[in-house]
Image (cartoon, rainbow, N blue to C red; front, side, top):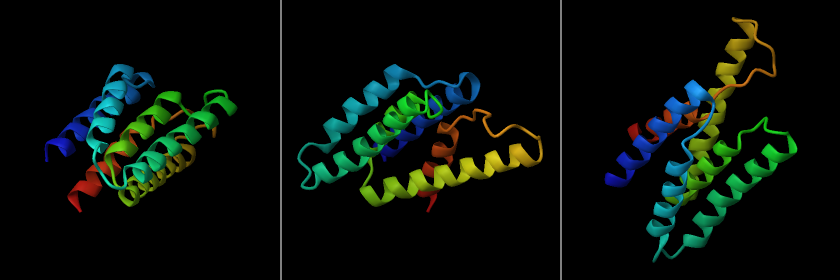
Length: 137
Protein backbone atom coordinates (compact mmCIF):
# COMPACT_ATOMS: atom_id res chain seq x y z
CA UNK A 1 0.00 0.00 0.00
CA UNK A 2 2.93 2.36 0.66
CA UNK A 3 4.24 1.81 -2.86
CA UNK A 4 0.85 2.60 -4.43
CA UNK A 5 0.48 5.73 -2.29
CA UNK A 6 3.98 6.86 -3.27
CA UNK A 7 3.27 6.35 -6.96
CA UNK A 8 -0.06 8.19 -6.63
CA UNK A 9 1.60 11.18 -4.90
CA UNK A 10 4.38 11.17 -7.51
CA UNK A 11 1.83 11.19 -10.33
CA UNK A 12 -0.38 13.79 -8.64
CA UNK A 13 2.52 16.22 -8.15
CA UNK A 14 3.73 15.74 -11.70
CA UNK A 15 0.20 15.95 -13.11
CA UNK A 16 -0.27 19.31 -11.42
CA UNK A 17 3.07 20.58 -12.75
CA UNK A 18 2.37 19.20 -16.22
CA UNK A 19 -1.07 20.84 -16.31
CA UNK A 20 0.27 24.20 -15.14
CA UNK A 21 3.68 24.46 -16.79
CA UNK A 22 3.82 21.63 -19.36
CA UNK A 23 6.80 20.04 -17.59
CA UNK A 24 7.49 17.31 -15.05
CA UNK A 25 9.47 17.54 -11.83
CA UNK A 26 12.74 15.97 -13.01
CA UNK A 27 14.24 15.27 -9.54
CA UNK A 28 11.09 13.34 -8.61
CA UNK A 29 11.33 11.30 -11.81
CA UNK A 30 14.98 10.45 -11.05
CA UNK A 31 14.04 9.44 -7.49
CA UNK A 32 11.23 7.27 -8.82
CA UNK A 33 13.58 5.54 -11.26
CA UNK A 34 16.02 4.81 -8.42
CA UNK A 35 13.20 3.60 -6.16
CA UNK A 36 11.83 1.43 -8.98
CA UNK A 37 15.22 -0.18 -9.56
CA UNK A 38 15.46 -0.84 -5.82
CA UNK A 39 11.99 -2.42 -5.78
CA UNK A 40 12.88 -4.72 -8.67
CA UNK A 41 15.85 -6.34 -6.97
CA UNK A 42 15.34 -9.98 -6.19
CA UNK A 43 12.33 -10.45 -8.45
CA UNK A 44 12.42 -13.44 -10.78
CA UNK A 45 11.03 -11.66 -13.79
CA UNK A 46 12.68 -8.29 -13.17
CA UNK A 47 14.12 -8.17 -16.68
CA UNK A 48 10.67 -8.41 -18.31
CA UNK A 49 9.38 -5.57 -16.18
CA UNK A 50 12.54 -3.56 -16.79
CA UNK A 51 12.37 -4.02 -20.57
CA UNK A 52 8.65 -3.24 -20.75
CA UNK A 53 8.93 -0.03 -18.72
CA UNK A 54 12.23 1.36 -19.85
CA UNK A 55 11.77 0.09 -23.40
CA UNK A 56 8.47 1.92 -23.72
CA UNK A 57 9.98 5.02 -22.15
CA UNK A 58 12.92 4.90 -24.56
CA UNK A 59 10.57 4.50 -27.54
CA UNK A 60 8.70 7.60 -26.36
CA UNK A 61 12.05 9.40 -25.91
CA UNK A 62 13.02 8.50 -29.48
CA UNK A 63 9.64 9.79 -30.68
CA UNK A 64 10.26 12.98 -28.73
CA UNK A 65 13.58 13.50 -30.50
CA UNK A 66 12.18 12.57 -33.92
CA UNK A 67 9.13 14.80 -33.51
CA UNK A 68 11.19 17.70 -32.15
CA UNK A 69 9.46 17.68 -28.77
CA UNK A 70 5.89 16.92 -29.84
CA UNK A 71 6.05 14.10 -27.30
CA UNK A 72 7.59 15.41 -24.11
CA UNK A 73 10.91 13.97 -22.98
CA UNK A 74 9.74 14.33 -19.37
CA UNK A 75 6.68 12.22 -20.20
CA UNK A 76 8.96 9.55 -21.67
CA UNK A 77 11.13 9.44 -18.53
CA UNK A 78 8.06 9.38 -16.32
CA UNK A 79 6.62 6.44 -18.28
CA UNK A 80 9.94 4.61 -17.92
CA UNK A 81 9.85 5.21 -14.15
CA UNK A 82 6.29 3.88 -13.87
CA UNK A 83 7.21 0.79 -15.84
CA UNK A 84 9.74 -0.15 -13.17
CA UNK A 85 7.00 -0.43 -10.55
CA UNK A 86 4.16 -2.12 -12.36
CA UNK A 87 3.62 -5.57 -13.73
CA UNK A 88 3.78 -5.57 -17.51
CA UNK A 89 0.05 -6.11 -18.10
CA UNK A 90 -0.98 -3.44 -15.60
CA UNK A 91 1.60 -1.02 -17.01
CA UNK A 92 0.39 -1.35 -20.59
CA UNK A 93 -3.23 -1.23 -19.46
CA UNK A 94 -2.60 2.03 -17.59
CA UNK A 95 -0.63 3.49 -20.49
CA UNK A 96 -3.35 2.53 -22.99
CA UNK A 97 -6.11 3.98 -20.82
CA UNK A 98 -4.10 7.18 -20.31
CA UNK A 99 -3.64 7.56 -24.07
CA UNK A 100 -7.33 6.85 -24.65
CA UNK A 101 -8.36 9.50 -22.11
CA UNK A 102 -5.93 12.00 -23.63
CA UNK A 103 -7.40 11.23 -27.05
CA UNK A 104 -10.93 11.89 -25.83
CA UNK A 105 -9.81 15.18 -24.25
CA UNK A 106 -8.06 16.16 -27.50
CA UNK A 107 -11.15 15.36 -29.54
CA UNK A 108 -13.26 17.48 -27.19
CA UNK A 109 -10.81 20.37 -27.47
CA UNK A 110 -10.85 20.18 -31.24
CA UNK A 111 -14.64 19.92 -31.60
CA UNK A 112 -16.00 22.04 -28.76
CA UNK A 113 -13.26 24.64 -28.30
CA UNK A 114 -12.12 24.59 -31.92
CA UNK A 115 -8.47 24.12 -30.98
CA UNK A 116 -5.95 23.21 -33.65
CA UNK A 117 -4.67 19.67 -34.00
CA UNK A 118 -1.19 20.76 -32.92
CA UNK A 119 -2.35 22.13 -29.55
CA UNK A 120 -0.18 20.78 -26.72
CA UNK A 121 -1.94 18.95 -23.93
CA UNK A 122 -0.44 17.58 -20.72
CA UNK A 123 -0.20 13.77 -20.61
CA UNK A 124 0.55 13.06 -16.95
CA UNK A 125 -2.94 13.99 -15.66
CA UNK A 126 -4.36 11.26 -17.88
CA UNK A 127 -1.79 8.78 -16.57
CA UNK A 128 -2.85 9.75 -13.05
CA UNK A 129 -6.51 9.14 -13.89
CA UNK A 130 -5.65 5.78 -15.47
CA UNK A 131 -3.50 4.76 -12.48
CA UNK A 132 -6.20 5.80 -10.01
CA UNK A 133 -8.76 3.85 -12.05
CA UNK A 134 -6.54 0.79 -11.90
CA UNK A 135 -6.20 1.11 -8.13
CA UNK A 136 -9.95 1.41 -7.76
CA UNK A 137 -10.65 -1.69 -9.81
